[in-house]
Length: 328
Image (tube, rainbow, N blue to C red):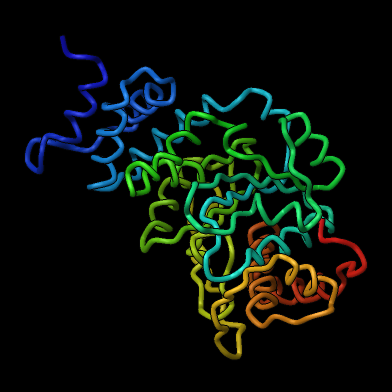
């Protein structure tokens, strides 16, 4: 007897002539079954890798996001940040300087929700590793995150607290050797339904796909761009296309180059270097440019200002930071 989920595998796996993409409704029901563990391990693997082979359509991703948001842990609704930022890529060439941009926002009255995951054996430096060294202690519950958001204006929650089933799928990369749609879905999750959200992506054209998805959620203002290593960090060494979606429509804004020259790869990746730069005891060409460009990009989203004004504000806020305290 054919199992119910097999129908979804047949739809996407029947070949170039016989197969087709899922509708939004089909994608919603399929992903809901996957997240609820109502499929076998073989079915889940086949489904995820078929999607990976031909890539998910925006319509499918929208259905998947609908399912994910419906199954988020209920207590998460008690968190009410202004800005949501997904931190899923992990840094490989440079430190996660964007976290200092987040610190500047938090120190200036913005409440920020960070969330992410880590993939075993990736060799990347994740936000969850760097943040405690920057002054934001690790929390072990959603209730602790709520208190931290009140006290610090910022918190970080691992995906395992928000949607454990999606976190499990992300960690299957170690089994498959390939990313799955879960990496995209986590970035789009915005688990607290914050008014503003930031999504950093890596692969070409993924930013365009994110825009099509974001346009289906008009109550959320979203910023998406190809960030350094796929994290929500603007590299000041190159011109960056910022895609800002408001009220279901997307606008493209260009963040110009602010760097005078290119920086070498950071071989040490020592978070203490970030603390030294914050305290004004050291300088880092790549890092300071990344902080300014990233902070300015966030301000374009939050304040609906133009790039020139955002860069001016970013420089001022960075200069006025409290160098005598830790970032968080």
